[in-house]
Length: 420
Image 1 (cartoon, rainbow, N blue to C red):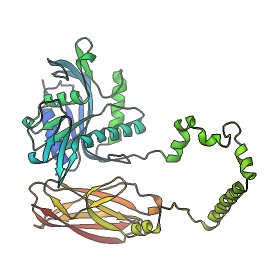
Image 2 (cartoon, rainbow, N blue to C red; image 1 turned 90 degrees about the vertical axis):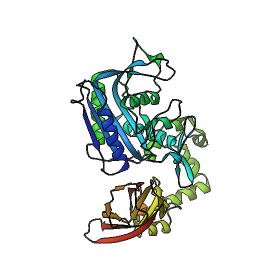
Image 3 (cartoon, rainbow, N blue to C red; image 1 turned 180 degrees about the vertical axis):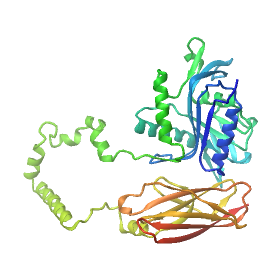
Image 4 (cartoon, rainbow, N blue to C red; image 1 turned 120 degrees about the vertical axis):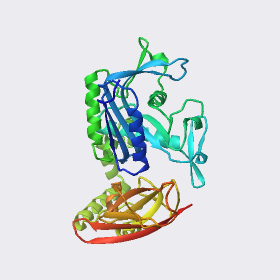
């Protein structure tokens, strides 16, 4: 068997922890024995799904095997290995480069230590499934099965619990990967037909349909694009088209809205309070047309507008989808520092971090595109991986920004400390 015809592509920014994990994954797949016409494998690192609850995906593995290939795999609740035919793979892989003392396992949960707080890596991995499925469902109009795995590059297989899990270690093999995918997909022997099981993440029976959907997905991800922007439907359109409100006519029943739609206006006109309401609505509309003033909600205060008008640079433990920053200026080795730039009509054009020895690293910012119109600004986030061999001490951050439609530039500086 040979893998010469197997096409494997890795996309991302070399040097990051996720890219190194992708290279390990690529080499591990290459060492597997696959048919000469096995197909294509794409490994996308550090993908941002803007607009999703879980925006950042460490690794997105996308593979398509038109002819399929079979392997003996030990499934859940099976005493002996079972023949499984693999047709495609869609999986998200969370990378946790923590040392052994900072990882702990329970029955079905893996937790990692950030400073003095344990956080669930399994919960993060599960949330990524929904982000990918929702994006594909809204953009491509079909829903795949997405497997989720967690890769611990500083652990060995012997460090994992003996119970079934979806964990990968540095010494995991391609057969281990296939077994973990089957566990994540909850494949069991009861679904076997003619002594063999199908592993397929695209829910379609025809090979032509499966191939077409994988072309759509590869086009959506792009060859060199690491941010997939998703604009959710507006709340107004969702409200109007949703059927769940049709079963709750209690509000409209007050005015007999369903039976006689025009009766509401007559009841309002016959009531002094209703007349006052109609007058205020009409007067407000006239004032808005004459002055061009945009009505704001109470929460859209002038404080929010003024804060957006002044560009800000901050280092954070993490950044929420709403551009909220858990500000921090001290980080430990083996963690991630997020750099957030928030400014009115400005975007970063040059971003660097300088370590205590004077070495310079370039940052890559991603635009969250989540700032409301009244903020009059944008939110850019960059991720800086602090390796375990990082030099402790002060790190300086310098961001040069440019005003939209102008050549004028501003320089913003910040700093943080890497501790032993």
